[in-house]
Image (cartoon, rainbow, N blue to C red; front, side, top):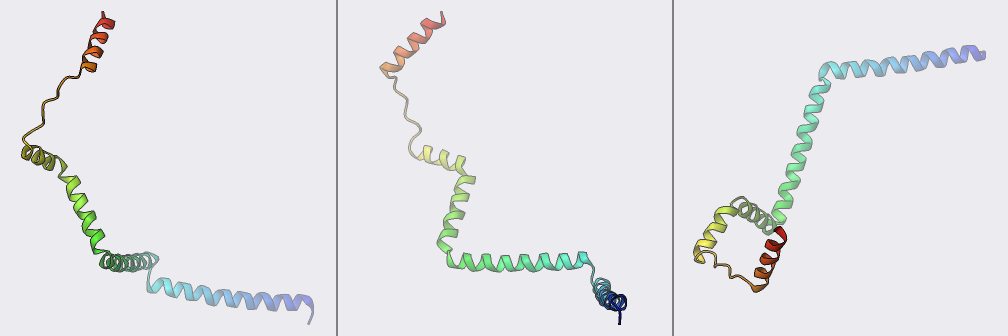
Length: 112
């Protein structure tokens, strides 16, 4: 067998292998589309992440409770601050300081 015949036999064998793999890909795609495969993979990954999150939450119940409490306190911070202020009897009046009086006088003089 010459080099030309060997090359032709190798080419035919490679082409037969390629054609069989291409047939497998076409059969797989006709059975289930790429979109369907992507959706299934995304669902599987989301379920795996949710399972892991549940496991971590079970191990760290105190941390989860503290985080939820902090988020609730932040969300309702204005009503909570009003409630605290009302319980304390309101804000104490601010007393003027002599240093502030001197500053006010100098700023008035500079403005004129």
